[in-house]
Length: 426
Ligand SMILES: *Cc1c(COP(=O)(O)O)cnc(C)c1O
Figure 1 (cartoon, rainbow, N blue to C red):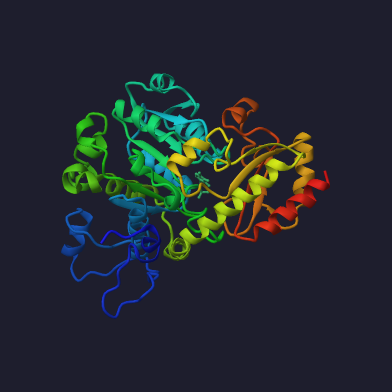
Figure 2 (figure 1 turned 45 degrees about the vertical axis):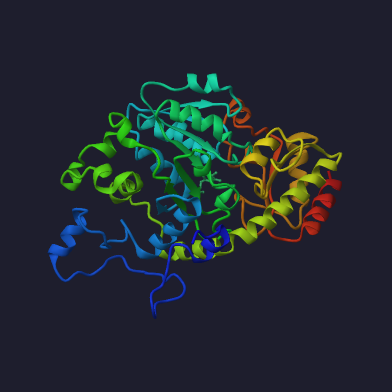
């Protein structure tokens, strides 16, 4: 029986047998016991599956990863210590020094830094493209050595909506996977695999956890990208791995398992950015209520955006669910049930007015966070995006007077009254 997303959020990933814990158990153990070295040796050779050390795999984390795989409609998934680690692994799993990636400019500031500074130092080159570019311009960004195309379903904090048709067509024309960070939409509002994406990443720190409790990330594979068809481009997946006695991932684990297995047994083994079982447990509690919470986040986001749009103290409002937004049609197509609870806007009077306004807010707190139960706000130009130059800020869609306002689960009327009194103080 094919289950709907609300049911998968509650029951996916973990099916207890007779007499086993109803809730996903926290297996707080670094290691696992075996009767013979021979049995454990098989695990090391990837000839048998099982647990031996929690840096590679842990049952609690695997149950939660399996739930996220079900939510996205993927074939395999893994948890990581953070969203940053997820995006790093997603690319580093298929690219190395000398390779090239095409990415949308409209991405999270931390991801931009990771790509443009840190991964560049590792010899991986990035070309950034405006998400509103023509298909021809997108095509022109690809090179012989391009290994992936990257974008965010709803960009943080620019709130532009990814044109999946355009991005998937370009990626597949050039024989590379489309990797999509689906953090803001969550699989409740958008499932990128249904629109041509091949790999999905998440900062589970945001809506998935939803309570500001645990930093985490996830990577999900659709199992649809044919690594074998482009075997020369992806030797890490299609040729023997000497660190595992010559295992070839696509042969041993098939298209449905090769990518995630490699990321776990190679990258996680060597880099070790695991999510703790305790954090995975919190994440699962968040996942259980995700559909209920997303509906409220979206309802609050829409009401707040409408209110701000009607205020003469506000220069502009960006909310993809608002009719008149430049990406409204894309949002309706890819996220007909709602987008997210984050609204961005520019306060008249520039940065100084924005600061005064934010200080006067009583319900919304100033935080370096988004997408949890408590309403919060931030001026990215002076905080998360302060490392970007003026030009990079504009390219990322983050003008200096932008306030990112993340609607929590409070009563929308309280949020609006709070906004109204703070705007009066400018
Ligand atoms: C927050 C965020 C990240 C980074 O995730 P962390 O869990 O903070 O490491 C990546 N992508 C998007 C879209 C984000 O909002």
